[in-house]
Image 1 (cartoon, rainbow, N blue to C red):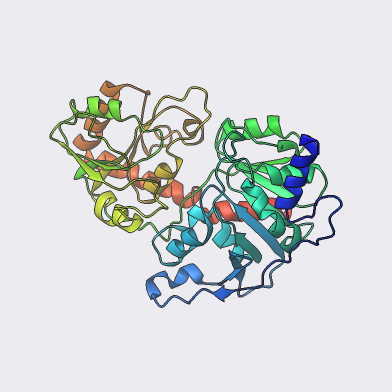
Image 2 (cartoon, rainbow, N blue to C red):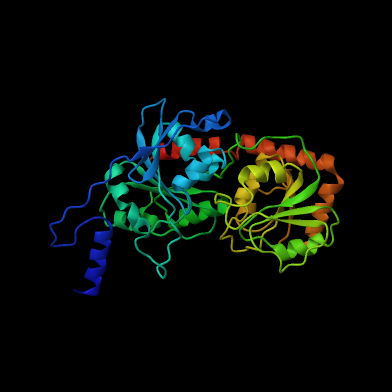
Amino acid sequence: MPAGRHRFNTIRHLCGRAPAGSVHPPKPLPQPISLMSPTTDSSVAHILHGIADRVEHGVVILGPTQLRAHRRLLYVNSYGGIDVWRKIRAGLLPTHHLWGCVQLARMGYEVALAEAIPDFDYRRRPLPHDLRLYKLVRHWLRNDDIVYCAHNVLYWLPFLRKLRLFRRHFVSLLFAHENLDFSECHSAVVALTPTAAHQAARLAPKAKIAHLGWGADLDFYPYRPYRAEYLLHCGIAGRDFPTLSKAAFQCHHPIRIVASQNLTSISWPKNVQVVDGGRGYNHEDKKVSFPELINEHYAGAAASLIVTISNPKKDHALGFTNLIEAMALGKPIIHTHTGALADEIEVQQRGCGLSIPPGDPIALAQAMNTIMSDPEMAATMGQKARQLSESHYNIARFSGELDRLFTSL
């Protein structure tokens, strides 16, 4: 058999379709296997308000209880699925980590939460990748329903749409100047930053482009009186610890670092406390949970330090999650002005923090000293940060605009 024909039959097999010449029909989707038990904790009961959840076809499906479901949505991301939903359901993780899906379920969508799909890399296990979702797309979604990918991890499913094997809307999300495979097969692209919106318009000129920003779940983040006990760094991806270390030697105020990596190779002065937060991202099982991060670390923070590596190409928006969460908690921000995020939220211009050049420990030390020497000014910055969250950077506003985008398709 020619190699090209073999690859095509492999894809057909992984999709649940018989190769050419075979008489075996595709296997049907399994029936619902269980329901998730109701929560008894009144403190998190609001999370399930208006939502029913069930496990069906091997995935969690959220649906409305007070409205008739009018559309189906398959949610895909590099993290998600039943484990993330269980954490959200238990009040251990804010709902914005499902990128509007919880709110959309209340609005009348049935939302299937797929298990995590990694970034596509043809050199490392390119199959089955997102092909394992083919049966859901083919048999559970209907022609006008939506595959909603909260980043750019899809590959095979939009490729199959290009081959006209099914008709579904594909909507992916870009943070920055990023790639989007088979962008021409997308009905819409959600952009979190102006850089992402420009890139989306270039990659998918026929698609609808919606610059929506993002936002935190304000129900999860209490607004508390300002305290200025220490400066807090708790970011994960792309952080510039060498610059932070040099700045710490020039700033004699207390600094607390909740670290997700081993920092023993970096020298730290005595005013720096390094807390082992556990490896991985905050949606994973870590030594410092999300509630602990808020109640034990953010609570006394004079400011949130978002110190990232230089990114002049703007192919990342490093610190976005950290920024919206610190703003929701009413914390002033010290942010490295680099990458796509600086185009979306310029903290100094918005009056909610101080911006510093990348790789500049002197500027960082000066910013930290400024915050600690003027708590009244810092508290005002924190108030403006919270106001900005309430007016725009919140998940309720984001999901509402997402619904309007989906309705327009």
